[in-house]
Amino acid sequence: MNAVQHTSIADVLTKADEIASLLRSSEEMKRFRQAEDKIARHGDAQALLFVVKAKRNQYSQLSLRHGYDHPAVTKAKQEYDEVLDRIAQIPLIDELQTAQEDLNDVIQGILHTLVSSVHNMLPVEKGEEPGDGASGGCGSCSSGGCGRH
Image (tube, rainbow, N blue to C red; front, side, top):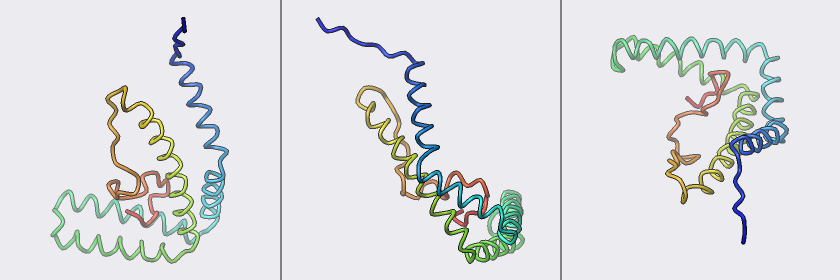
């Protein structure tokens, strides 16, 4: 007679911690951290990232208050887009975006594997698939100005 082995939630969480540790030591995480460090030492990029956050907030607040067709909102959107264009011309920003996308792909792969493994046994909602554009941005941009949103 085969005994059914039960796994405790503590065991599951331990495995999750192990996966997180593997992710933290991955090549993708290393490239992402290196790109972040380069950006942190780039004065022009830091200044533009600060400005883009302010412009994005201004655009957001105005659009909520007045709607998207208001002249002040149109002007704020134009200013925001101009700063994004300036940021996009800094090669380090592109490097950070690429590293962030690679890291997100690994994380999405982990999530997809977990959901796929249990979806027949549990009512798990899959959510949006990676790359379908539903998120509208990078989703984890700590700089707030990655240029994707």
